[in-house]
Image 1 (cartoon, rainbow, N blue to C red):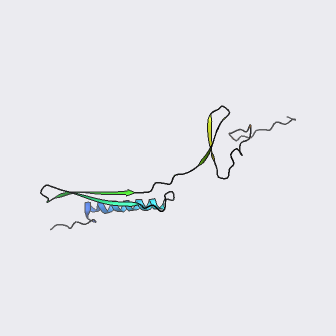
Image 2 (cartoon, one colour):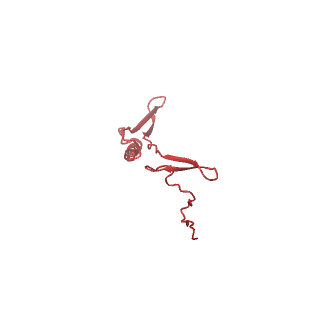
Image 3 (spheres, rainbow, N blue to C red):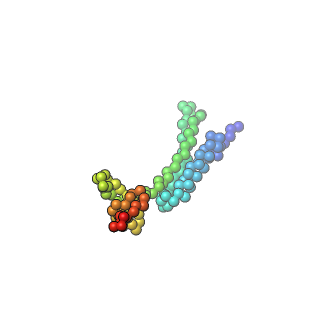
Length: 121
């Protein structure tokens, strides 16, 4: 007596395990806030059966695959200029920042405090 062929029994339960893993992968992708909400995710379970010449046996391949959404691209604005030596430099422009508002002449870029020269010194 043979055991009936079911999805649950395929490959010793491995087909269902792989299908569950693929579904979990799709659910994790849906919950990722960096991915779009309105695009569908696809989970596939593919069974390929190749019969022998006499058609009394066959080899079965079980495959799972997912089509997920990639993270949405990130956008940033940058300011491009040259430093005192003529080398190209860039800095990210933060929201609400006005280009050049933080640039003061003769300020140490490392953030060290320097004394301002006065007539008394």
